[in-house]
Every structure is written in C-alpha cells, then in structure tokens.
Length: 173
Image (tube, rainbow, N blue to C red):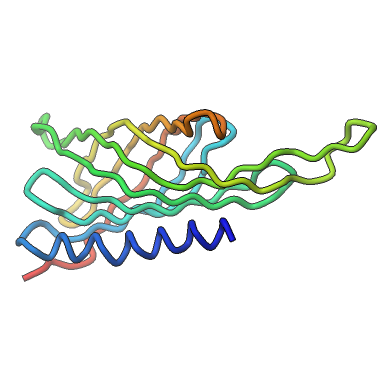
C-alpha cells in the first residue's frame, strides 16, 4: 500500500508540473539520469525531470532506486523547486528544496543475530541543497547536485552527491 502511495505521488508530480510550466514560455523540459553516492540510505541511481516555471525557477520531479537493508529494493520520489543563481562564467549554480516519499527498511534478525530480511517503511522526507549546471553542447548539460534529506526522525537522515547529464527534450511554443 505504501509503495502504491509513493507511485501515485510520482504520477501526480509528473502530471502537475508540466501543467504549471505550460503557463509561460521558457526553456525546454530536461531529463537528467543520475548516479550518486552518499550515506547508506541514499539512492545511487535515478531520473530527474525538470520543468521550467520562470526564467530562473524550475519544478523538478525525481524518482530513484536503491538496493537496501536485507537486500530489498527501495524506491523514492520527490518534487523540488530549483532556483538558478547568477551565472559564474558558463556555469549556472542553483539552490534546491523539496519534499518527497522514501522507502526504507528495518532489519529483521534471528535469535542468532543474523539478518533474515527487512520490513518496508515509508517516510515523508524534506530535501535541501544545491548544485551546478555546465553546458556540454547546445541542449546537453553536465549537472552535479548535493542534497541533504531529513525524514524528521522516522528514517535516518542522509545526504547524497549526484552527477548526471541533463538533456533537453523539447521546447514549448
């Protein structure tokens, strides 16, 4: 049931953000697959979809995957606002903050102390951080992003450093 809630949230974000972005003309929507490292509870792979809202403000939907406690697979999804800061040369720094749902596990151990599996749990998470976007070619950017995730005590806090390539997927008229 909790996994269903996370999937529904991701679907709502992917359906709502484009509607908000469609209200004005702006840069194109970008897809950014990423690989990351950080604490044990962060997802090492995922996809970010960025919908421009204004010239410097964007809505980002993210879905990510990690192999977790007890060799159980966990999904996370979030929606964040990104605000571009003034350019430094060709690089655009940005700040980010958002909210999402993250699955995590509580290990089940036997009397001997051996792990026998994990119980899935779902936590509301808040994220804050920032990053840099640097153009590679027209329509393709390198992106590096640092985020701190806080689950308000229901799951372990975590951080991650994600690197990926953003690709423009179309310009609105």
